[in-house]
Amino acid sequence: RLNVIIQPNLKFMYELLQYEQKLTGRMSINWSWLTKEIHALNMFYVGS
Image 1 (cartoon, rainbow, N blue to C red):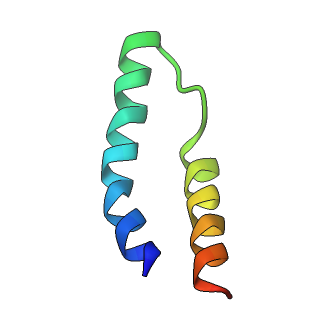
Image 2: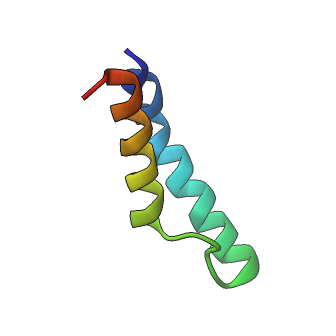
């Protein structure tokens, strides 16, 4: 299942957002938007 592949990368994506904030002083996207999009991608492949 694809969501098994995507979900472990949430920590990596969170760390990238934190790194972006450290470099630029802000995040270009917010965490809630990112997780919503990952959820939508999961639902597309799971078929629910």
